Length: 466
Ligand code: SAH
Ligand code: SF4
Ligand code: F3S
Picture 1 (cartoon, rainbow, N blue to C red):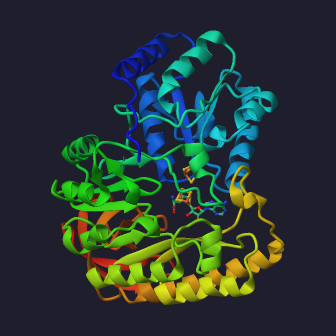
Picture 2: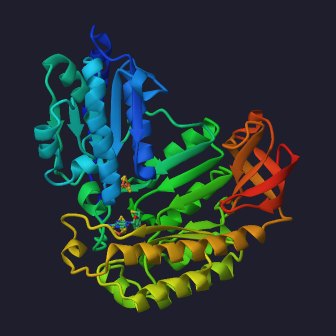
Picture 3: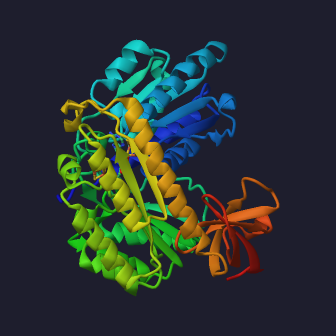
Protein backbone atom coordinates (compact mmCIF):
# COMPACT_ATOMS: atom_id res chain seq x y z
CA UNK A 1 0.00 0.00 0.00
CA UNK A 2 1.29 3.43 -0.93
CA UNK A 3 2.20 5.94 1.74
CA UNK A 4 -0.15 8.84 1.31
CA UNK A 5 0.48 12.49 2.01
CA UNK A 6 -0.99 14.00 5.12
CA UNK A 7 -3.03 17.17 4.60
CA UNK A 8 -0.55 19.95 5.48
CA UNK A 9 -0.77 21.59 8.87
CA UNK A 10 -1.19 25.01 7.21
CA UNK A 11 -4.38 23.75 5.58
CA UNK A 12 -5.73 22.54 8.93
CA UNK A 13 -4.87 25.95 10.45
CA UNK A 14 -6.68 27.63 7.56
CA UNK A 15 -9.77 25.58 8.40
CA UNK A 16 -9.46 26.69 12.02
CA UNK A 17 -9.57 30.28 10.80
CA UNK A 18 -12.80 29.51 8.93
CA UNK A 19 -14.29 28.09 12.14
CA UNK A 20 -13.58 31.38 13.87
CA UNK A 21 -14.98 33.32 10.91
CA UNK A 22 -18.23 31.31 11.05
CA UNK A 23 -18.47 32.10 14.77
CA UNK A 24 -18.22 35.82 14.01
CA UNK A 25 -21.09 35.85 11.50
CA UNK A 26 -24.30 37.47 12.72
CA UNK A 27 -26.62 35.19 10.85
CA UNK A 28 -25.06 31.84 11.51
CA UNK A 29 -26.57 28.54 12.63
CA UNK A 30 -26.51 28.10 16.40
CA UNK A 31 -27.43 24.44 16.61
CA UNK A 32 -26.79 21.32 14.55
CA UNK A 33 -28.15 17.82 14.07
CA UNK A 34 -26.23 15.08 12.27
CA UNK A 35 -27.93 12.04 10.75
CA UNK A 36 -25.27 9.38 10.43
CA UNK A 37 -26.00 6.48 8.08
CA UNK A 38 -23.96 3.44 7.12
CA UNK A 39 -20.98 1.92 8.85
CA UNK A 40 -18.63 2.76 11.71
CA UNK A 41 -16.39 4.76 9.35
CA UNK A 42 -19.25 7.17 8.86
CA UNK A 43 -19.96 7.22 12.59
CA UNK A 44 -16.35 8.13 13.22
CA UNK A 45 -16.53 10.86 10.55
CA UNK A 46 -19.66 12.17 12.22
CA UNK A 47 -17.64 12.63 15.43
CA UNK A 48 -15.22 14.85 13.49
CA UNK A 49 -18.12 16.73 11.90
CA UNK A 50 -19.65 17.34 15.34
CA UNK A 51 -16.27 18.59 16.57
CA UNK A 52 -15.97 21.05 13.69
CA UNK A 53 -19.54 22.31 14.03
CA UNK A 54 -19.06 22.89 17.76
CA UNK A 55 -15.92 24.87 17.05
CA UNK A 56 -18.08 26.93 14.70
CA UNK A 57 -20.10 27.87 17.77
CA UNK A 58 -23.00 25.43 17.38
CA UNK A 59 -24.56 23.18 19.99
CA UNK A 60 -26.08 19.77 19.39
CA UNK A 61 -29.87 19.73 18.90
CA UNK A 62 -31.22 16.30 19.89
CA UNK A 63 -34.37 16.83 17.80
CA UNK A 64 -33.71 17.25 14.09
CA UNK A 65 -36.49 19.78 13.50
CA UNK A 66 -35.03 22.10 16.17
CA UNK A 67 -31.64 22.42 14.51
CA UNK A 68 -30.45 25.41 12.44
CA UNK A 69 -28.12 23.12 10.49
CA UNK A 70 -28.95 19.55 9.51
CA UNK A 71 -26.22 17.37 8.07
CA UNK A 72 -26.74 13.99 6.44
CA UNK A 73 -23.67 11.75 6.47
CA UNK A 74 -24.82 9.29 3.81
CA UNK A 75 -24.15 5.69 2.77
CA UNK A 76 -24.64 4.08 -0.64
CA UNK A 77 -23.48 0.50 -0.11
CA UNK A 78 -26.90 -0.83 -1.12
CA UNK A 79 -29.73 0.78 -3.04
CA UNK A 80 -31.97 0.99 0.03
CA UNK A 81 -29.31 3.00 1.88
CA UNK A 82 -29.25 5.46 -0.97
CA UNK A 83 -33.04 5.64 -1.21
CA UNK A 84 -33.24 6.30 2.50
CA UNK A 85 -30.75 9.16 2.25
CA UNK A 86 -32.49 10.73 -0.73
CA UNK A 87 -35.92 10.28 0.84
CA UNK A 88 -34.78 12.06 3.97
CA UNK A 89 -33.25 14.90 2.03
CA UNK A 90 -36.39 15.45 -0.03
CA UNK A 91 -38.39 15.62 3.19
CA UNK A 92 -36.15 18.50 4.31
CA UNK A 93 -37.45 20.57 1.42
CA UNK A 94 -40.76 20.82 3.28
CA UNK A 95 -39.02 21.79 6.51
CA UNK A 96 -37.09 24.50 4.71
CA UNK A 97 -40.35 26.03 3.47
CA UNK A 98 -41.34 26.82 7.06
CA UNK A 99 -37.79 27.49 8.21
CA UNK A 100 -35.97 29.25 5.35
CA UNK A 101 -32.81 29.95 7.36
CA UNK A 102 -32.23 26.20 7.84
CA UNK A 103 -28.87 25.10 6.42
CA UNK A 104 -28.97 21.65 4.80
CA UNK A 105 -25.68 19.81 4.25
CA UNK A 106 -25.23 16.42 2.60
CA UNK A 107 -21.96 14.53 2.52
CA UNK A 108 -20.49 11.06 2.84
CA UNK A 109 -20.31 8.11 0.50
CA UNK A 110 -23.47 8.78 -1.54
CA UNK A 111 -22.42 12.27 -2.62
CA UNK A 112 -19.06 10.84 -3.72
CA UNK A 113 -20.80 8.56 -6.25
CA UNK A 114 -20.15 9.44 -9.86
CA UNK A 115 -22.69 11.96 -11.14
CA UNK A 116 -24.53 12.21 -7.82
CA UNK A 117 -23.41 15.73 -6.86
CA UNK A 118 -24.42 17.11 -10.26
CA UNK A 119 -27.78 15.36 -10.01
CA UNK A 120 -28.36 16.78 -6.53
CA UNK A 121 -27.38 20.26 -7.62
CA UNK A 122 -29.86 20.14 -10.49
CA UNK A 123 -32.76 18.42 -8.73
CA UNK A 124 -32.45 19.56 -5.12
CA UNK A 125 -31.45 23.24 -5.23
CA UNK A 126 -32.67 23.67 -1.63
CA UNK A 127 -29.58 21.80 -0.39
CA UNK A 128 -27.03 24.37 0.78
CA UNK A 129 -23.93 22.21 0.80
CA UNK A 130 -22.88 19.01 -0.92
CA UNK A 131 -19.39 17.68 -0.20
CA UNK A 132 -17.74 14.25 -0.61
CA UNK A 133 -15.68 11.82 1.42
CA UNK A 134 -12.26 13.25 0.49
CA UNK A 135 -12.86 16.88 1.45
CA UNK A 136 -14.73 16.51 4.74
CA UNK A 137 -11.98 18.43 6.56
CA UNK A 138 -12.92 21.54 4.54
CA UNK A 139 -16.39 21.68 6.06
CA UNK A 140 -15.62 24.95 7.97
CA UNK A 141 -14.63 26.70 4.74
CA UNK A 142 -17.77 25.44 2.98
CA UNK A 143 -20.11 26.49 5.78
CA UNK A 144 -18.49 29.92 5.71
CA UNK A 145 -18.99 30.14 1.96
CA UNK A 146 -22.65 29.17 2.22
CA UNK A 147 -23.16 31.90 4.82
CA UNK A 148 -21.36 34.65 2.94
CA UNK A 149 -22.14 33.83 -0.69
CA UNK A 150 -25.78 33.05 0.03
CA UNK A 151 -25.89 30.33 -2.61
CA UNK A 152 -25.34 26.59 -2.50
CA UNK A 153 -21.86 25.12 -2.45
CA UNK A 154 -21.38 21.82 -4.27
CA UNK A 155 -17.85 20.49 -4.04
CA UNK A 156 -16.92 16.86 -4.46
CA UNK A 157 -13.30 16.19 -5.35
CA UNK A 158 -12.12 13.16 -7.24
CA UNK A 159 -8.69 12.71 -5.64
CA UNK A 160 -8.07 9.44 -3.89
CA UNK A 161 -7.84 11.26 -0.65
CA UNK A 162 -5.05 12.09 1.71
CA UNK A 163 -4.74 11.28 5.36
CA UNK A 164 -6.18 13.96 7.57
CA UNK A 165 -4.75 14.35 11.05
CA UNK A 166 -5.81 16.71 13.77
CA UNK A 167 -9.48 17.31 12.99
CA UNK A 168 -11.58 18.49 15.91
CA UNK A 169 -13.85 15.81 17.36
CA UNK A 170 -16.73 15.24 19.68
CA UNK A 171 -16.74 11.58 20.69
CA UNK A 172 -19.98 9.73 21.41
CA UNK A 173 -18.63 8.85 24.88
CA UNK A 174 -15.33 8.70 26.70
CA UNK A 175 -15.15 4.99 27.54
CA UNK A 176 -15.64 3.38 24.16
CA UNK A 177 -13.83 4.91 21.18
CA UNK A 178 -13.39 4.36 17.46
CA UNK A 179 -9.87 4.81 16.08
CA UNK A 180 -9.30 4.86 12.31
CA UNK A 181 -6.11 3.11 11.30
CA UNK A 182 -6.60 3.23 7.54
CA UNK A 183 -8.96 4.55 4.90
CA UNK A 184 -10.21 3.29 1.56
CA UNK A 185 -10.09 -0.10 -0.09
CA UNK A 186 -8.18 -1.69 -2.98
CA UNK A 187 -10.04 -4.97 -3.17
CA UNK A 188 -12.74 -4.20 -5.69
CA UNK A 189 -15.06 -7.01 -4.74
CA UNK A 190 -17.22 -7.02 -7.86
CA UNK A 191 -20.45 -6.09 -6.00
CA UNK A 192 -19.04 -3.28 -3.90
CA UNK A 193 -19.07 0.47 -4.36
CA UNK A 194 -16.87 1.30 -1.37
CA UNK A 195 -13.54 1.46 -3.29
CA UNK A 196 -15.13 3.96 -5.68
CA UNK A 197 -16.43 6.29 -3.00
CA UNK A 198 -13.73 5.91 -0.34
CA UNK A 199 -10.69 5.81 -2.63
CA UNK A 200 -7.50 3.77 -2.47
CA UNK A 201 -6.13 2.22 0.68
CA UNK A 202 -3.99 4.51 2.80
CA UNK A 203 -2.74 3.89 6.32
CA UNK A 204 -2.09 6.27 9.18
CA UNK A 205 1.37 5.99 10.71
CA UNK A 206 1.66 3.79 13.81
CA UNK A 207 2.83 6.90 15.69
CA UNK A 208 -0.36 8.80 14.83
CA UNK A 209 -2.54 5.83 15.81
CA UNK A 210 -0.67 5.22 19.09
CA UNK A 211 -0.74 8.92 19.99
CA UNK A 212 -4.52 8.92 19.53
CA UNK A 213 -4.92 5.76 21.64
CA UNK A 214 -2.77 7.24 24.42
CA UNK A 215 -4.84 10.41 24.43
CA UNK A 216 -8.08 8.40 24.54
CA UNK A 217 -6.67 6.28 27.36
CA UNK A 218 -5.82 9.45 29.33
CA UNK A 219 -9.40 10.59 28.77
CA UNK A 220 -10.74 7.33 30.20
CA UNK A 221 -11.16 4.94 27.26
CA UNK A 222 -11.85 1.38 28.41
CA UNK A 223 -12.33 -0.05 24.95
CA UNK A 224 -11.11 0.94 21.53
CA UNK A 225 -12.34 -0.29 18.17
CA UNK A 226 -9.75 0.03 15.41
CA UNK A 227 -11.40 0.79 12.09
CA UNK A 228 -10.61 0.19 8.42
CA UNK A 229 -12.36 -1.40 5.44
CA UNK A 230 -9.72 -4.09 5.48
CA UNK A 231 -7.50 -3.69 8.55
CA UNK A 232 -5.43 -6.74 7.56
CA UNK A 233 -3.79 -4.82 4.75
CA UNK A 234 -2.69 -2.03 7.09
CA UNK A 235 0.86 -0.90 6.28
CA UNK A 236 1.81 2.18 8.22
CA UNK A 237 5.45 3.29 8.27
CA UNK A 238 6.43 -0.28 7.36
CA UNK A 239 4.48 -1.85 10.24
CA UNK A 240 1.91 -4.54 9.58
CA UNK A 241 -1.39 -4.78 11.39
CA UNK A 242 -0.29 -7.49 13.82
CA UNK A 243 2.67 -5.31 14.88
CA UNK A 244 0.43 -2.30 15.36
CA UNK A 245 -1.88 -4.41 17.52
CA UNK A 246 1.03 -5.57 19.68
CA UNK A 247 2.06 -1.97 20.25
CA UNK A 248 -1.47 -0.91 21.15
CA UNK A 249 -1.86 -3.91 23.43
CA UNK A 250 1.15 -2.77 25.46
CA UNK A 251 -0.59 0.53 26.28
CA UNK A 252 -2.86 -1.33 28.67
CA UNK A 253 -6.28 -0.12 27.47
CA UNK A 254 -8.50 -2.91 28.86
CA UNK A 255 -10.25 -3.86 25.63
CA UNK A 256 -9.22 -3.78 21.97
CA UNK A 257 -11.36 -4.82 19.03
CA UNK A 258 -11.04 -4.18 15.30
CA UNK A 259 -13.02 -4.37 12.09
CA UNK A 260 -13.21 -5.30 9.24
CA UNK A 261 -10.92 -8.22 8.35
CA UNK A 262 -10.69 -9.68 4.88
CA UNK A 263 -10.17 -13.47 4.94
CA UNK A 264 -7.59 -13.33 2.15
CA UNK A 265 -5.24 -11.19 4.28
CA UNK A 266 -5.66 -12.75 7.72
CA UNK A 267 -2.04 -13.49 8.63
CA UNK A 268 -0.67 -16.18 10.96
CA UNK A 269 0.63 -13.39 13.21
CA UNK A 270 -2.85 -11.98 13.51
CA UNK A 271 -4.37 -15.38 14.27
CA UNK A 272 -1.78 -15.87 17.00
CA UNK A 273 -2.49 -12.42 18.40
CA UNK A 274 -5.83 -13.83 19.57
CA UNK A 275 -3.95 -16.32 21.72
CA UNK A 276 -1.28 -13.93 22.92
CA UNK A 277 -2.42 -10.36 23.35
CA UNK A 278 -3.81 -9.61 26.77
CA UNK A 279 -6.28 -6.93 25.77
CA UNK A 280 -7.45 -8.19 22.39
CA UNK A 281 -11.03 -9.36 22.84
CA UNK A 282 -12.02 -12.82 21.57
CA UNK A 283 -14.20 -11.48 18.78
CA UNK A 284 -13.65 -11.26 15.04
CA UNK A 285 -15.83 -9.97 12.24
CA UNK A 286 -14.67 -12.01 9.26
CA UNK A 287 -17.16 -11.58 6.41
CA UNK A 288 -17.38 -14.69 4.26
CA UNK A 289 -19.98 -13.27 1.81
CA UNK A 290 -20.77 -16.68 0.23
CA UNK A 291 -20.15 -20.38 0.65
CA UNK A 292 -19.68 -21.35 -2.99
CA UNK A 293 -16.24 -21.16 -4.58
CA UNK A 294 -17.70 -20.19 -7.92
CA UNK A 295 -19.60 -17.27 -6.38
CA UNK A 296 -16.56 -16.24 -4.32
CA UNK A 297 -14.51 -16.22 -7.51
CA UNK A 298 -17.03 -14.06 -9.33
CA UNK A 299 -17.17 -11.76 -6.32
CA UNK A 300 -13.36 -11.39 -6.64
CA UNK A 301 -12.91 -12.33 -2.99
CA UNK A 302 -9.59 -14.19 -3.64
CA UNK A 303 -10.18 -17.04 -1.20
CA UNK A 304 -12.03 -20.32 -1.25
CA UNK A 305 -14.55 -21.85 1.10
CA UNK A 306 -11.83 -24.32 2.19
CA UNK A 307 -9.42 -21.50 3.00
CA UNK A 308 -12.09 -19.73 5.03
CA UNK A 309 -12.96 -22.88 6.98
CA UNK A 310 -9.26 -23.45 7.64
CA UNK A 311 -8.95 -19.92 9.05
CA UNK A 312 -11.88 -20.62 11.36
CA UNK A 313 -10.27 -23.85 12.53
CA UNK A 314 -6.95 -22.12 13.22
CA UNK A 315 -8.59 -19.21 15.03
CA UNK A 316 -10.50 -21.61 17.27
CA UNK A 317 -7.33 -23.62 17.92
CA UNK A 318 -5.60 -20.56 19.44
CA UNK A 319 -8.75 -19.07 20.97
CA UNK A 320 -11.49 -21.69 21.51
CA UNK A 321 -14.03 -19.16 22.74
CA UNK A 322 -13.66 -16.67 19.89
CA UNK A 323 -16.94 -15.18 18.70
CA UNK A 324 -17.03 -15.04 14.92
CA UNK A 325 -19.42 -12.82 12.99
CA UNK A 326 -19.94 -12.41 9.27
CA UNK A 327 -21.58 -10.55 6.41
CA UNK A 328 -23.34 -12.68 3.81
CA UNK A 329 -24.78 -11.72 0.44
CA UNK A 330 -27.70 -13.72 -0.94
CA UNK A 331 -28.74 -13.69 -4.59
CA UNK A 332 -25.49 -12.58 -6.17
CA UNK A 333 -26.06 -12.54 -9.99
CA UNK A 334 -26.40 -16.07 -11.27
CA UNK A 335 -26.45 -17.70 -7.81
CA UNK A 336 -28.03 -21.14 -8.26
CA UNK A 337 -29.98 -22.97 -5.58
CA UNK A 338 -27.04 -25.35 -5.14
CA UNK A 339 -24.67 -22.44 -4.64
CA UNK A 340 -27.01 -20.92 -2.09
CA UNK A 341 -27.14 -24.29 -0.29
CA UNK A 342 -23.35 -24.08 -0.04
CA UNK A 343 -23.74 -20.84 1.89
CA UNK A 344 -26.26 -22.56 4.17
CA UNK A 345 -23.91 -25.47 4.79
CA UNK A 346 -20.99 -23.14 5.53
CA UNK A 347 -23.13 -21.28 8.07
CA UNK A 348 -24.04 -24.61 9.68
CA UNK A 349 -20.40 -25.58 9.80
CA UNK A 350 -18.96 -22.35 11.17
CA UNK A 351 -21.74 -21.50 13.61
CA UNK A 352 -21.36 -17.71 13.63
CA UNK A 353 -22.35 -15.74 16.72
CA UNK A 354 -24.13 -13.37 14.34
CA UNK A 355 -24.33 -12.74 10.62
CA UNK A 356 -25.51 -9.65 8.77
CA UNK A 357 -27.35 -10.87 5.69
CA UNK A 358 -28.10 -8.82 2.58
CA UNK A 359 -29.84 -9.40 -0.69
CA UNK A 360 -27.45 -8.46 -3.47
CA UNK A 361 -28.06 -4.91 -4.63
CA UNK A 362 -26.62 -3.82 -8.00
CA UNK A 363 -24.45 -0.72 -7.69
CA UNK A 364 -23.78 1.40 -10.76
CA UNK A 365 -20.16 1.33 -11.89
CA UNK A 366 -19.31 -1.99 -10.21
CA UNK A 367 -18.44 -5.05 -12.25
CA UNK A 368 -21.20 -7.29 -10.92
CA UNK A 369 -23.83 -4.76 -12.03
CA UNK A 370 -23.09 -5.91 -15.60
CA UNK A 371 -23.51 -9.62 -14.77
CA UNK A 372 -26.73 -11.27 -15.96
CA UNK A 373 -29.09 -11.91 -13.09
CA UNK A 374 -32.11 -14.06 -13.80
CA UNK A 375 -33.10 -15.04 -10.26
CA UNK A 376 -36.46 -13.44 -9.40
CA UNK A 377 -36.46 -11.19 -6.35
CA UNK A 378 -39.10 -13.39 -4.69
CA UNK A 379 -36.70 -16.34 -4.86
CA UNK A 380 -33.91 -14.25 -3.35
CA UNK A 381 -36.27 -13.17 -0.54
CA UNK A 382 -37.15 -16.78 0.17
CA UNK A 383 -33.47 -17.72 0.29
CA UNK A 384 -32.50 -14.93 2.64
CA UNK A 385 -35.37 -15.83 4.96
CA UNK A 386 -34.12 -19.42 5.16
CA UNK A 387 -30.65 -18.13 5.93
CA UNK A 388 -31.93 -15.74 8.60
CA UNK A 389 -33.94 -18.54 10.23
CA UNK A 390 -30.92 -20.81 10.27
CA UNK A 391 -28.60 -18.14 11.66
CA UNK A 392 -31.11 -17.17 14.35
CA UNK A 393 -31.38 -20.76 15.53
CA UNK A 394 -27.57 -21.02 15.69
CA UNK A 395 -27.24 -17.66 17.47
CA UNK A 396 -29.76 -18.77 20.06
CA UNK A 397 -27.81 -21.96 20.72
CA UNK A 398 -24.58 -19.97 21.03
CA UNK A 399 -26.23 -17.59 23.48
CA UNK A 400 -27.79 -20.43 25.47
CA UNK A 401 -24.33 -21.95 25.88
CA UNK A 402 -23.30 -18.78 27.76
CA UNK A 403 -25.91 -19.27 30.50
CA UNK A 404 -24.31 -19.92 33.88
CA UNK A 405 -21.01 -18.26 32.94
CA UNK A 406 -19.56 -15.30 34.83
CA UNK A 407 -18.56 -12.51 32.49
CA UNK A 408 -16.99 -9.10 32.82
CA UNK A 409 -19.27 -6.64 31.10
CA UNK A 410 -18.38 -3.13 29.98
CA UNK A 411 -21.62 -1.28 30.64
CA UNK A 412 -22.54 0.90 27.66
CA UNK A 413 -26.05 2.26 28.15
CA UNK A 414 -29.38 2.15 29.90
CA UNK A 415 -31.25 -0.84 28.53
CA UNK A 416 -33.70 -0.04 25.74
CA UNK A 417 -36.46 -2.07 27.39
CA UNK A 418 -36.32 -0.99 31.02
CA UNK A 419 -34.80 2.16 32.52
CA UNK A 420 -33.78 0.26 35.68
CA UNK A 421 -31.67 -2.04 33.57
CA UNK A 422 -28.36 -1.46 31.85
CA UNK A 423 -26.71 -3.17 28.89
CA UNK A 424 -23.12 -3.90 27.98
CA UNK A 425 -20.85 -6.31 26.16
CA UNK A 426 -18.98 -9.41 27.24
CA UNK A 427 -15.42 -9.89 25.93
CA UNK A 428 -16.87 -12.03 23.12
CA UNK A 429 -19.17 -9.19 22.14
CA UNK A 430 -22.50 -10.54 23.39
CA UNK A 431 -24.84 -7.87 24.67
CA UNK A 432 -26.07 -8.54 28.25
CA UNK A 433 -28.99 -6.80 29.93
CA UNK A 434 -29.15 -6.74 33.72
CA UNK A 435 -30.74 -4.76 36.54
CA UNK A 436 -28.36 -1.97 37.45
CA UNK A 437 -27.92 1.71 37.99
CA UNK A 438 -27.03 4.11 35.14
CA UNK A 439 -23.97 5.14 37.21
CA UNK A 440 -22.45 1.85 36.00
CA UNK A 441 -22.20 3.19 32.44
CA UNK A 442 -18.58 3.28 31.30
CA UNK A 443 -17.50 0.84 34.04
CA UNK A 444 -16.92 -2.89 34.24
CA UNK A 445 -19.29 -5.16 36.11
CA UNK A 446 -19.08 -8.87 36.92
CA UNK A 447 -22.27 -10.49 35.75
CA UNK A 448 -23.64 -14.00 35.92
CA UNK A 449 -25.51 -14.93 32.76
CA UNK A 450 -28.98 -16.17 33.70
CA UNK A 451 -30.82 -16.58 30.38
CA UNK A 452 -30.59 -16.14 26.64
CA UNK A 453 -32.93 -14.22 24.36
CA UNK A 454 -33.01 -14.02 20.56
CA UNK A 455 -30.09 -11.63 20.21
CA UNK A 456 -29.03 -10.75 23.72
CA UNK A 457 -28.33 -12.26 27.13
CA UNK A 458 -29.79 -11.52 30.52
CA UNK A 459 -27.76 -11.55 33.67
CA UNK A 460 -27.42 -10.70 37.36
CA UNK A 461 -24.74 -8.40 38.68
CA UNK A 462 -22.26 -9.98 41.05
CA UNK A 463 -20.20 -6.91 41.85
CA UNK A 464 -20.13 -3.52 40.18
CA UNK A 465 -16.37 -3.35 39.51
CA UNK A 466 -15.19 -6.45 37.69
N1 SAH B 1 -14.98 -3.83 4.09
C1 SAH B 1 -15.93 -4.68 4.57
C2 SAH B 1 -17.36 -4.43 4.24
C3 SAH B 1 -17.88 -3.14 3.78
S1 SAH B 1 -19.52 -3.10 3.19
C4 SAH B 1 -15.58 -6.06 4.11
O1 SAH B 1 -14.78 -6.25 3.23
O2 SAH B 1 -16.15 -6.99 4.59
C5 SAH B 1 -20.41 -4.10 4.37
C6 SAH B 1 -21.09 -5.27 3.79
O3 SAH B 1 -22.10 -4.87 2.89
C7 SAH B 1 -20.22 -6.20 2.98
O4 SAH B 1 -19.50 -7.08 3.77
C8 SAH B 1 -21.23 -6.91 2.11
O5 SAH B 1 -21.72 -8.07 2.73
C9 SAH B 1 -22.36 -5.91 2.00
N2 SAH B 1 -22.45 -5.36 0.65
C10 SAH B 1 -21.55 -4.58 0.01
N3 SAH B 1 -21.97 -4.29 -1.24
C11 SAH B 1 -23.17 -4.90 -1.39
C12 SAH B 1 -24.11 -4.98 -2.46
N4 SAH B 1 -23.89 -4.38 -3.62
N5 SAH B 1 -25.26 -5.70 -2.24
C13 SAH B 1 -25.48 -6.31 -1.07
N6 SAH B 1 -24.64 -6.27 -0.04
C14 SAH B 1 -23.48 -5.57 -0.18
FE1 SF4 C 1 -16.09 -3.63 -0.39
FE2 SF4 C 1 -14.65 -5.81 -0.71
FE3 SF4 C 1 -13.47 -3.51 -0.05
FE4 SF4 C 1 -14.99 -4.75 1.73
S1 SF4 C 1 -13.08 -5.53 0.85
S2 SF4 C 1 -15.03 -2.57 1.24
S3 SF4 C 1 -16.59 -5.65 0.48
S4 SF4 C 1 -14.50 -3.95 -1.97
FE1 F3S D 1 -21.80 2.88 3.55
FE2 F3S D 1 -19.67 4.26 2.99
FE3 F3S D 1 -19.68 2.68 5.08
S1 F3S D 1 -20.96 3.26 1.53
S2 F3S D 1 -21.07 1.05 4.50
S3 F3S D 1 -20.94 4.44 4.83
S4 F3S D 1 -17.94 3.13 3.76
